[in-house]
Image 1 (tube, rainbow, N blue to C red):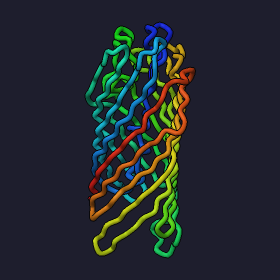
Image 2 (cartoon, rainbow, N blue to C red):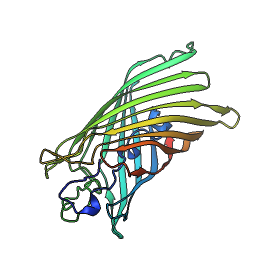
Image 3 (cartoon, rainbow, N blue to C red):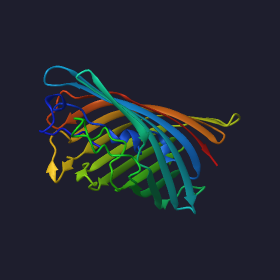
Image 4 (tube, helix red, strand yellow):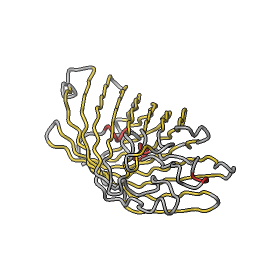
Length: 295
């Protein structure tokens, strides 16, 4: 979701920030490339800061705790459910507004188009998957955002049924692996005639695995990059200025697997941020931690 910056809002909101949806989306660690059956939890936090026209600091903070469950159907179809709980704060003119609650529940399917990972003689393995998903309006959209002079992104949900799709590629050679992922999300218009802009995210990762066979411990340090792009939001079919954005992040991280358990964390370091006509907006580093159990 992107932040509403509209001409009819008071001056303190004309230079505010936008939220990074991919922080609670699909590209925050190796768990996004896991196959099979697992259940896990994920925590993420991120924020933005800038200044209003009169020099007052404007800050927003977003936090998310997600329950993730995955089930494999045969060899080619995987279904992942994401159940997010969010809390957030927005400070402008020394006034802080907060909200928390269940966000939009997502269902994502991964369908294997090609894979030779089952070939025991193959030294190099490749897997290509397509993705299709739906996001349900279980989180509340703030229908008072105009009255309260708040950004529309300070809502627990989009208020609409949203669709997503994409591709994912995995390559492995000995202890090295490479991943590439692309996802696009289309938001429908909600009951208030608000529609969040088209969202796209692309990521690449390189992983080196270290294994202690006696203790059955696997360490997987990795590094990669994430690109995010959000198009204009619209309200009653009117384009809202300040809601278009592009971000590029460096993504170092580490995961550790022992037995059926895995834990991991990564840091998203902003390299480039472009927010419409708001050059003073600064995206902060994003932190993600997760743990999951395979069965």
